Image 1 (tube, helix red, strand yellow):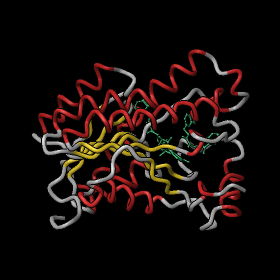
Image 2 (cartoon, protein in one colour):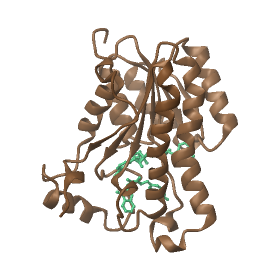
Image 3 (cartoon, protein in one colour):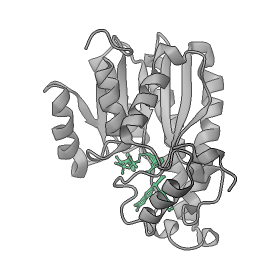
Image 4 (cartoon, helix red, strand yellow):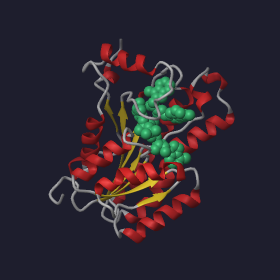
Length: 258
Ligand code: NAD
Ligand code: 0WE
């Protein structure tokens, strides 16, 4: 596509695991809007998944490995990206991880190691990826990260992920300040609950979706298509005055007091 909102833009997408991934929904929308995309995959286990998905964008779509908890892998990834394109415009961060046991019991029992991992992979990585991407964003850029309401209110069992998302959102503001002079914007989308791989096996997850159907103004959480549309908006020049923000795409749930 050559006449979309993102034509002549190149983006890197972190966080596609399978076709239900939020990263995949936003990548499809960015692609439809005209962006050229480069993808990471977390490890050999996910390589084939990502390879098969991105084939939809043409056989020459680049994918490179990157575990975001490894500085050398971030450096190697962006070295390959700069071999591929001279200019970068977009970065999607759609990555989170906490050890499963940390999302089950009491927050009080969070181990030092679970806290470290959750913050390293889910929050610090935005800083590391932004620092590596920024030198390629020579004509400004848009950095987008995915967050969740458990950063600002207690959602039972979200636990250390909530604290890591609070760190991610605060990091978004400090990065927006640092990078603003280079016309690089940094924002978060706060999505309502979605049935993805990261949600599978979370006990009571379907009850959460039901809760949104009963309590959110729009009587539901959000769709992946809606996340795609908001992702295109925030990445586009139409959002050129918006940085450091957390935009809720959650059926309106966040405004409710009861
Ligand atoms: P997902 O499982 O499809 O995506 C999570 C991704 O994180 C995977 O692609 C996984 O490979 C990647 N990842 C984990 N550890 C990594 C590492 N060390 N290095 C590189 N990649 C790593 O699930 P999703 O729901 O699409 O999650 C994407 C983002 O959206 C996350 O930040 C999540 O917190 C956020 N989010 C999800 C929901 C929801 O309800 N599903 C709601 C709001 C926000
Ligand atoms: O950010 C998330 C989930 C991220 C996540 C998911 C897992 C599952 C598998 C991070 N780490 C892991 N580790 C694993 O081993 N969401 C916004 C989805 C989510 O997860 C919850 C939620 C919601 C919503 C967990 C408890 C309560 C609510």
